[in-house]
Image (cartoon, rainbow, N blue to C red; front, side, top):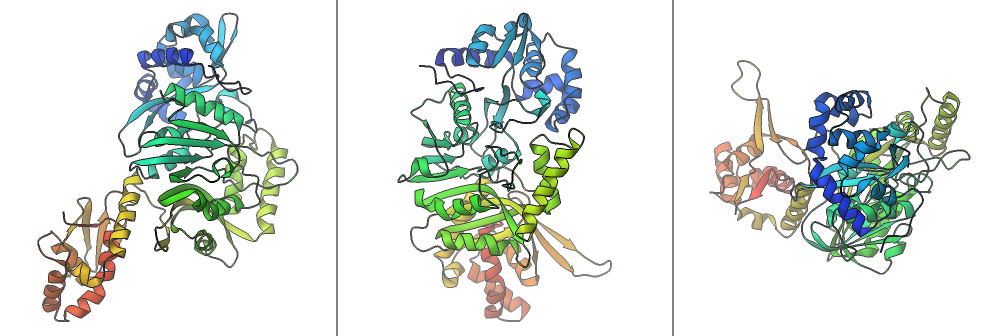
Length: 515
């Protein structure tokens, strides 16, 4: 049976969706196909929300099937009916209209939704999907509606790439939006539940799941706020790209369902961190993105650390970015479609409201980052808050999963136990030495990680020597004893110097237990 309609959202009719999938698969309308038609320059410009090069590139090949789909569903250009009929021969334009994908005016067709190819890269291999969402400002030339359903953006891609992807029985996608996290989760779990406060978002998620060939037995969608729709249930993995944007709750300020959680300040992220443990099974992991306020006289980790403590969970928070209040206001006012060029008065009013709101709580900065939580079987043993603002190697999910496993391995091991282990240097680790010309010894030795978080660890003489010998042949204790004799300081001194750092290198994946 077709899904119940939601205003402006596509209808999920299995027969018509199957026909659409057949046509899109045959057309070559994929990530690679789009880039081949556009060329590198136009494709890059389109990623920056600049359509002119793409319009020019597709105008020259407007009768090409992929070009027609690009112009219709990515650029919002009115397309001749006969052109779109060639692109969708099985579905037909009539079928596309019945699904709510297009509107027809005589011989002209215009898209009602954004429908774009997406290649999933999440650590479990690649898969190609098509994702429907509301048309953006680029296609409509207008500010976003407050119930706008966002497609795959930078934040959702980040979350997909940092999520741990080992096999899980039950997964919750809290705030599913267009359903992209639920689709990713379906690849490594038996059953997924997606929740959202927006009926329109759930309609898009249902359509996208059907287009990906995912049936309702694998993905259940529920309407409701935060954890309410799943109260009393337990999940092995919770993922959430929540509406974390800190928006003033003042008259005249638009509130967008996809980004604004309806709470003052950063309360929605705090509530989620402190409350998600209620739906986590023992050993279950929750991963989410969030913003948090940095108030005068505080460090960012003071505030977020108090939330971790209140959660009763293992916690690891990585702050990736810090903006001042003015930068933050500019980012999100533009995101809603208000610009100083389009409406100077509205821009100034909203800018002032944002600054006043932050000033009322003494906010000096706003952090953005990745939160990983885990329900421990016993007492919490992981509390890690760090800032990593440099380039990372995505997908990070495998590195995060490996670090959690390494934490557990180390937590069960005394220094005497560690001394009996054999370690090897990870294959992506290199050593950099910095010397003053003419000086035989380096002043600085860096151990640099090529993958994952791309960490650079400064190593002293003993640690550099220790890592240099970690090839799996000698035990940690044997290496420490040899270094004590070589450096003439004794094994105990070397152990006190090296072992804490060695634990850190194992935790972060620069050193690995020998197999």
